[in-house]
Amino acid sequence: LLDVEENTRLGSQGPDFVKSHSWFNGIDWEALRHHTFPVPPEIISRITQYLEVRYEDSSASTESPLEEVEELNVPEWLEDW
Image (cartoon, rainbow, N blue to C red; front, side, top):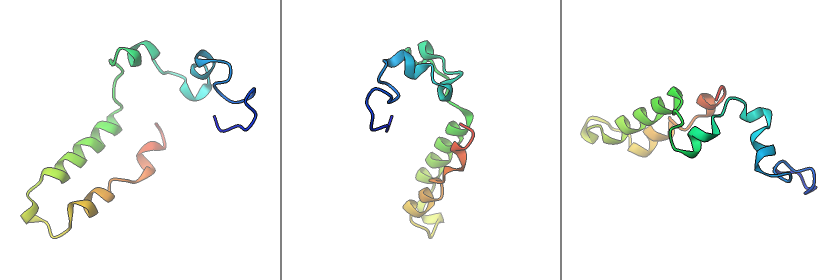
């Protein structure tokens, strides 16, 4: 996508060419289009952790919520996704 040459850039040959790229192997494009694509468990886990941190009793913690949320902003959960 970041190739300077427009004619060799991923996407220059249309959306089907992008969808056929090996990085997207296993993507169910119709499910994604119809919003029925399953959310990976790692993402659900991170969302759940975020919501628990965000809505827990603020009097029980001395850290600011921002500091607690920043702990969740680590890229490890993306490595296998």
